[in-house]
Image 1 (tube, rainbow, N blue to C red):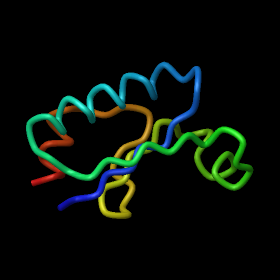
Image 2 (image 1 turned 135 degrees about the vertical axis):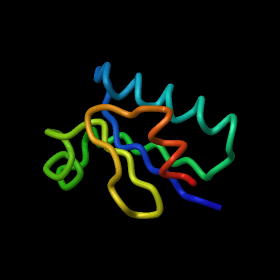
Image 3 (image 1 turned 90 degrees about the vertical axis):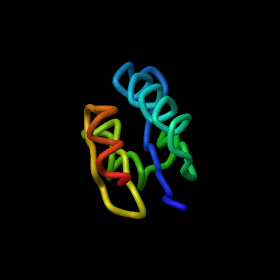
Image 4 (image 1 turned 180 degrees about the vertical axis):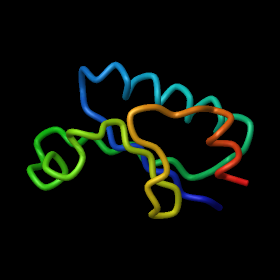
Length: 77
């Protein structure tokens, strides 16, 4: 099963939208989903804050800023 991670932060409207898109695709094609709030973690803040939201599939960054449902479906294969 594929593993999808969404790095996000509170108050990030792009993040909220990305999570909605990822969850809607998940209802069609199951995959493991991990939501990681970067708030309060200096390492994650430094790595991801300028790019949020960040979506990884099986450890590979596949989306930043915006997630398209169609593109996510294609990436999940």
